Length: 410
Image (cartoon, rainbow, N blue to C red; front, side, top):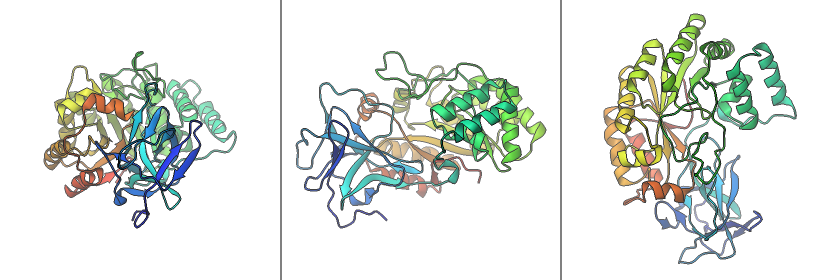
């Protein structure tokens, strides 16, 4: 249950230096596609791991009209396992800088405690942040790389583990859960919020650097075999945040799968993909692929194209890949990039209900889309009839499809 029942919702904000203040005499607005007061059932106490962040150049909006002048809007970044329900509502000043690629969630104060607009949708120890003692991570990286010093992919995973804190990269060295196998430096989409490669005129830097080489099948196979030796029910996954689209390297992945299965029969071989090339996906299924997670932000062609900006494919190809994987009996997850006011628009809900009724996937992973909300709405448009994120997510569950945030083996 939420922790806000029976208590007033007050304004949480920062000053220009990022110091956080509470004002329970003023009621904030949230943004759910249009500006409105938050509903009590949309609020929970900020869970452990929540990160508060200031929104520079932006003033919070107040119920009854007006802005909290000389105040800076506050947002929250949620830990893994939680799904955002509302955005912060604010007015941007003329010199407001673009926001970095984070998932901005509405935050407020209730009973002198920070609350956020979110719901818990998954939990897994393998996705719980690991806090390393001084030098501990570096020692793990050195020891593992010493066993395979010429493996370029392993060296890349060490960078991702150390510099970006990537969980799936760290899992290679921690020997747990889902392990990353980045394979492709190229992509056939130019996502507006790509975390590894943005256009020079995007106005903000990418939070990660795209892998710069085409991974060797032998390097990939050695990483995967070692992981499955030590993690009997582990997952090895092609397609990571530091790379482009893995289906563009289908031959290398086929060879890697064959090498893995020549040594290990256990574990799950997974592919994270935009689903753009159904024929290539079919080749990987024939090679022994067992699970696939296909990413999309919308089941509507115009909204999908506005964000993904695909080259040589469109949403029909993506949905064909989903249908193919379901038909072939894979464990199929959707990496559904959610955003209040887009995911819960009545037109979007109707579109995903039509498709998922005909092609019931194993799991819908609700992923907060990390992007400046104003930038996203400028691309895809504001909703005509937002139903609320809780209602939209409930509609998925009503189809008999569970929600989650992580890759599961069962």
